Length: 504
Ligand code: HEM
Image (cartoon, rainbow, N blue to C red; front, side, top):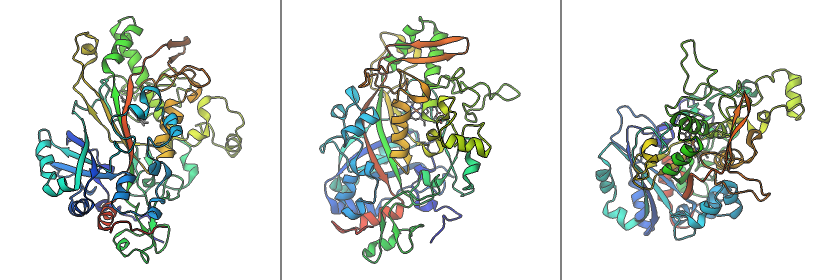
């Protein structure tokens, strides 16, 4: 059995798993269909994909690649191998009505209204992510679109992106909180050391083929090299002697095009706060959980000089949501809980919690332990910048604006889908009622008739301040689940004859 190596195989990992490529401000996300399988394989066998070894010196440009299940099948990955991928990946983001309901993809968010990613006609085979320095994208794109490329692929859609600085279109700094991946395998496996929140995350939570936070290996396709000689190219499976691992150094990439009604957001907030600029900003910050400078609303963690750490905080000191509302976007997306609430230390308390006795606070739910539900976010914005002040001007220029939301995870169901469903869309998160994520919610009433269009700011001085009848600010325009292979796995896929690949 191979152990998780001491030095990570960065040469086999696509760079996006380690770097955000922030200096490469210009991006183009191309959704492709394969039109000629032979040419596609030749192109894929030769293409230069940036690995994760180093960004020093910083690259001038970068190229990353990921496949849908449709694309893998088109390239000849056989059904026994496909069956080794997760059900969510195989079914796709829009492949099942109950999944759509769980993700909040109903009413105006429903796949039937998407611009891409649903039905067969609008389903891509692969995603190319192009990154370039300011002004360098056109040249980068034309150098990629060789004659062979044009024979191999047709462009289904190029997703718009535009660099508006390190903020998202509503105007808040983005990309502040990311998990700290334990590339050097330093983290202990003793679960008792994991009672409190830690930002450190096992490699296996974002990369397949390594131990995850349960100390286990996430399912992925393993191939017997005795039945498929081409599999000799692949890395060994760490948990199955003699098997080759198609997943190792790969990841699942979740892509969602989320259109943001920036004018609608600021106009609603203006109205809800009596056109008082300070109150408007305060309400917006409460919805996000950070202010317009990116500072967290949790103030109890300031240092001796009154300085707020950007990311070193939890909600332990604010169980009632008096500093940061319980339903704020960042609190829902990462409640920063450990395996046990902070005061649970002794054996007796642990057993009491394990068996569910003595729950006094809504956030004492053990299921909500955050380390099993982290996301590595790599999205980019699109549409021209509109400041909050400009947004309030009725003559503000209309334009499509939003986020090409990307996250990388090893388990789509346990990570992205759980966060989206149980935390963002749920109107029962941490004891909240009649509300879902203030940024992302679709605002449709539940089947029980309960509403989801409110937002509460808990207040130590009295009853919560309620904002009602919130419109939808974010609409889903498309989406999909992709497999981002390790670089040896990419070469293996490119080398397959049509219709082969025996799997476990
Ligand atoms: C248009 C849609 C969205 C907007 C405008 C938005 C905006 C933001 C902002 C401003 C932050 C705070 C900055 C930071 O900590 O990096 C943030 C954090 C975060 N968002 Fe979103 N977001 C959107 C969609 C989503 C979606 C779809 C998910 C996942 C399902 C998500 C998950 C997260 C997570 C995990 C964090 C970090 C929370 C933390 O660790 O404190 N976001 N988002």
